[in-house]
Image (cartoon, rainbow, N blue to C red):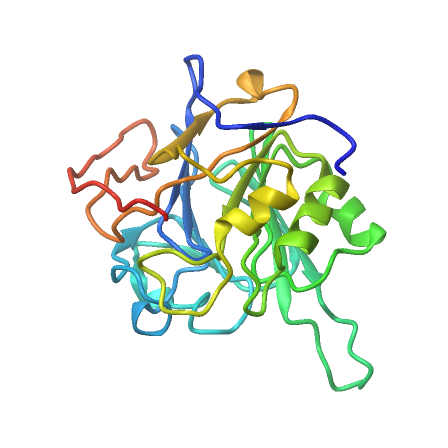
Length: 258
């Protein structure tokens, strides 16, 4: 049992500048007015399914070198591609990459996953990549305070439902956004979202939303699980960082992440 209250769903009360959009698998776009736009783990649609991605961003992060997470050709206009651990400051966004999964018995086995924490003016978002094991205490401490966690829950090389719930318990974030699970658009054999929700003590999801809008001041006191619909990989409302200017492109609605 988790040591704190878990709720379901979240709606920003207003004045929320951060927007998080999911495009399926482990790919998200993080945008906030006047700050750099980030795309995480762009995928090759032929490998994982979903619509082919045609996104634009200032920064792209890659958790590990696999077609479901490293397809940089899907993102245009980026000036920075981050593919491993370190500390970075780009476009007023602070990024910390923490290497994990380097626990093989053979000396030749190298760490294969990087967790990223994005600090948008004090609002922190952690992308767990293709994390396979519960992080060590040292890794958790390296991540720092996590307000929002984007976490794999469907197995298939990433965390399964039980391990994902354990990681949530360790991090105690304000908001949990599941990723890397079975949907109608996915080709890969992954577990359903409902398994994770059950581990979290929640009923099967009956509501979802196209994107999460949030601000530091509006974060919920108790942990909330927010289920996002996966969006088309092209043409949905894009926001690019170019000073104070914003440019938008109209597009079609996303699928239901069933």
